[in-house]
Image 1 (tube, one colour):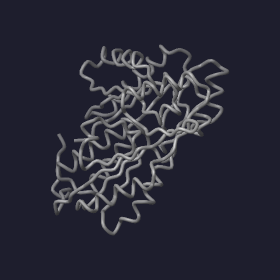
Image 2: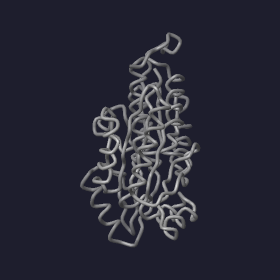
Image 3: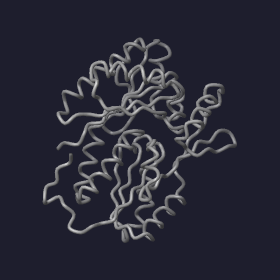
Image 4: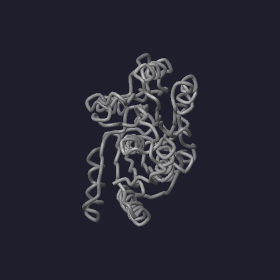
Length: 301
């Protein structure tokens, strides 16, 4: 339950739209809302271009191809023309404000593209851009909170403040089976890949406070990775008295994700989970069998 202070209430009833990129993996209910505008990133594989997707069959096909070929796909930002069309539609439908949520600016130019295009509409709309400093379910949770806070009657300044708090507190940790792709894509230093391949250890990566992907810790077995995920949950439970939600995102290794889920549920049977695929854009860099955990603190009451 979100509590509202009188000073944080909107003085007028503003009509708000939401823009978010496809790496957020938002669920069907959110995606079907008329006030939510999803901007699709793209994957280019040879001469073919694919739109980022959350379609289960298409994601499975993507990971099967990724495993069977040495040619790595490339990713690109949402098309500026499509984003401009979304803004035009938002203005035409009489919205007063827009909340934009993007994947970490430190790993993608999407944030800057959204900011650049939004500048053309600042006279018509009150625009707030939130850098998730992460991706996937962190973005989805930000969107859920934005909608919830707006419905509860908070003003935009307060919503922006609460969303920025969440993006700073939410944490993502991930283990990637093949580190070469993420290094080639410029998302991790070659030293990180050296640790994984030459020393035969399993680096746990994370998004740091700036949203950069860095080596967080080094372990030697998959079992120890899972146990470390559990201790990270322990630390978060102790840190956030209002509770946390968890998310497990994987590169076509659902059994591994469910194994981690069961391990955590043994200790925290009431824990809320969301489990799903990394979209093709994220899978391009994470690769098949990557497995990440998102620790998502609930907003303070």
